[in-house]
Length: 198
Image 1 (spheres, one colour):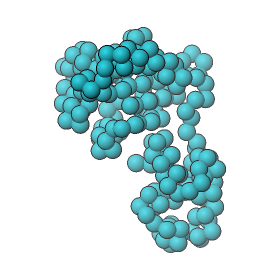
Image 2: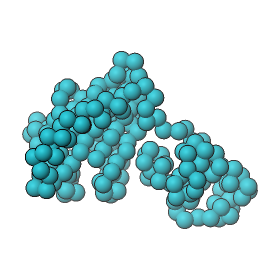
Image 3: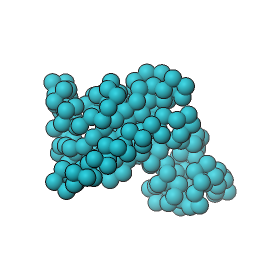
Image 4: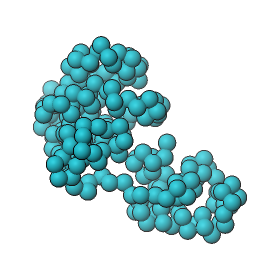
């Protein structure tokens, strides 16, 4: 599942806060690095139409200018699903797209019907003012997180960054408070969830 929210006055999710569940990290890296949000058929169609979009329908509509994206997404097993979006909200100035992929041979007709009922409500939640805003981290806080993700200790991080171990601990305490977590693993997980750490 993908949930994408962007603070924008336009239909643009290129600089969005995204939450991904059950999708390969390699695909996510490719998606971000190649700015696929601009050509993703589900995103484009979901932001234009006020209804649930079937992936196959979006693939057919944008096949002529998104064939590489379609082929690559299928390579990662992403070929069937639903998407729904909302263009920029007039008060919150947020655009959102929710997309879910599934194996059509495993999902029952009843589960698909339930998904079609719940999915629009889930996407509406994303455009509420203030929802899913990621905490702002300083450059130094992001750097200590990057080193922690590379399994560096506080001492090693301090040495690499040319700061004291006490300053590293200070940065981590602030990160924990901003994310509402208690440890490095939780902070790293939140940073990745918010797209602040790749």
